[in-house]
Amino acid sequence: SEKLKLQDALLKIPCRLSISVDMWRSNTQMDFLCLTCHYIDHANDEWKVRKKILNFVHVEAPFTDDQIASLILEKLREWGIDRKLAAIVLDNCASGEIVARELLVVLQPRRLLLLNGNLFQVRSCAHILNLTVQESLEQTSDIITRVREMIQNVKFSQERFEKFQDTAKLLQMDQKLLVLDSPNNWPSTYLMFDSACYYHDVLMRLAEQEAHYGAFLTAKEWADVKALTEILDALYHKMEKFPVENPTANLYFNDMCEVHVLLNTWRNSPSPVVAQVADRMLTKFEGYWDLTRPVMAFASILDPRYKMKSVEYFCRLIYAADQFRAKTTIDDIRQSFTNLCSEYEQSGNSFKNPSALFYSATSNSCMSSVYSNGDDFKTFSRITLSDARRGLDQYIQETSSGQSFKSDLDMYLEEPVYRQKEGHLDNFDILGWWKSFAAKYPVLSQMARDILAVPVSIIPLDSDARTLNEYLSTMDPSTVQGLVCAQDWLREDTEVASSDGHADDKAARGDELIVLPK
Image (cartoon, rainbow, N blue to C red):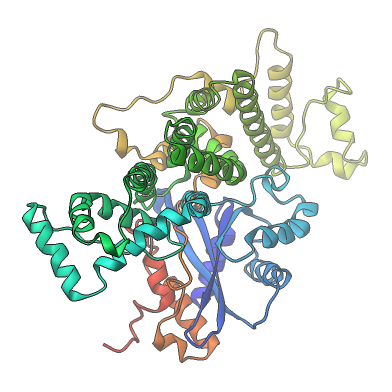
């Protein structure tokens, strides 16, 4: 079956898998858990980012966070991949923090996770920005309400809206949509502010003509709206960059650090409203960013165009007023990356032939290592000439004067960064680079396959977007799972390259199912 083929493929892939968890709901209020794995495939000698839906399973309501964590573990074990996890993204899952902690309680004691689980839970860039901005705008709810009421007043009747349009024509303004936002959706609030600022002269003219309505903004309120619009404009356009065609994790560290720098700058703005909002945003951002920064920093280090350079540059820029903190942060990231590299080196050594002959520094004798496996003749007879030669090679390497062993990491960081030609900076194929240099950096290339596949580019969806269509909502839950998963499995190993980042969301809703009525 297709499930067995996928399971066999996932078990054979020589890399870790990352998981994303989404909660969906039918229009009959039935809840579903969607489990998706993300990895870098090496089929046909090509490194490509892939993702596959593993389960789309019905969850009986009411359910607890413990039950969700148990269900995730159960499904991972069914697939046999609970021992090869890299990271998990729970952005589209309520109480993701609690679910992650419950998973760690089970997985940490088994020592199956990278850096003892310190890299396990990751938030996507878009989720970090969404939480940062939405929660920070709560303190500006008064001005948001005022702008919303002003636009509602303009759109209150056809007569008023026509008067607005006539005034815009009189002022020779190009037509642009006058946006009314959706509460608790900051991108729509930005678009509302932006359209209000665009029509500032029109709205001021109407305010003069209809002063008795009292729905229009004062001069101070307009100044605050324009200042906030500048902040939201920068963050909105940063958010637009996240759904890209090759969503490897290395693309996002610089972007998020740039946001950090902007928030630092805005916090010192002469505009009180900007300074207050930016200060709140910075506090929120740093709290959310701390969880994900290690993974993104590691991905940046694994980008041969940057190595440690981005980490060093942005830490010194972000903490310009506290260079001790900058140095400490850089050193911590470097040490954690070195520790991770050591973990990979040790896990690689564990696959060597345990009966191989090696030089023992503690006994100063190669033969002592032979007898350490048992001193009976049968055990000794299994030692081959090639084993002895390997022991000699290792002895020469370890005892030759002036000869020092350099690890993957030492060589990689000592060599110059990879320089691209002008005009090709956005076309760098990092997976192709690591595929080409896998033989030179065997340990780091394995790390690259695991870290670069962490799905930090996922776009969090609101509850409406995570609702099954009417057709699927009428089906039995097991049938829904069969249809959603089967369609995903039967695709031709589609590379993760959706221009809007939501191709699989359409599949989960059922919008692309062949069985849908025309």
